[in-house]
Amino acid sequence: MLTLLVENWWLYVLRGSIAILFGLMALVWPGITVQVLVVLFGVYVILEGALAMAGGFKKQTVKSRWLLIVEGALGIAVGLAAFALPGLTAVALLIFIAVWAVLTGLVELAAAFSLRRQMAGEWVLGLAGAASILIGVLLLANPGAGIVAVIWLIGIYALIFGLLLSYLGIKARKMEII
Image 1 (cartoon, rainbow, N blue to C red):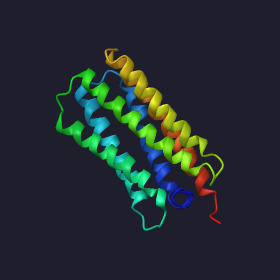
Image 2 (tube, one colour):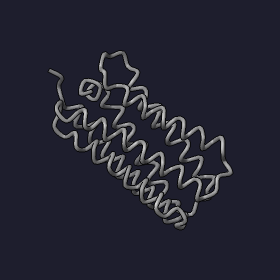
Image 3 (cartoon, one colour):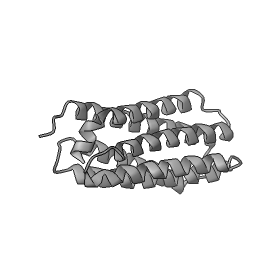
């Protein structure tokens, strides 16, 4: 897993940058319609998922790469489902996003756990996973909350997640594989 992280550091920075951009867009335009949010969310998770899978499919013999492939496949599947069902209500979209956040968080926690003996700072990925799970649980606990408040919550989450992934990528870039 460490080899995968170090060799693909730039994917983490790119994924983090996309999350930061998505978060800023959600915060700058909180009054956007649900349809625009569906499109933004769909594009975001498909791109994020494709980048995660790209890291997992690189020609390496790392047995933990399946975690990136699973995370990427989940993101792409959720993004495609968002496009296939554009008439989602606000509550259905929130549940959709919440489930995706919890599943992604669980995969990220598993990846962080697998890195714990290989590198210092794996807690960053674990923290990103915990943040994903927390946001997902909060959304599931109160799906009837106002859409603007939820857009702000999603925007803040995407910013934090993006900053953490970017930090992890930058930290991995400075590491050498022994």
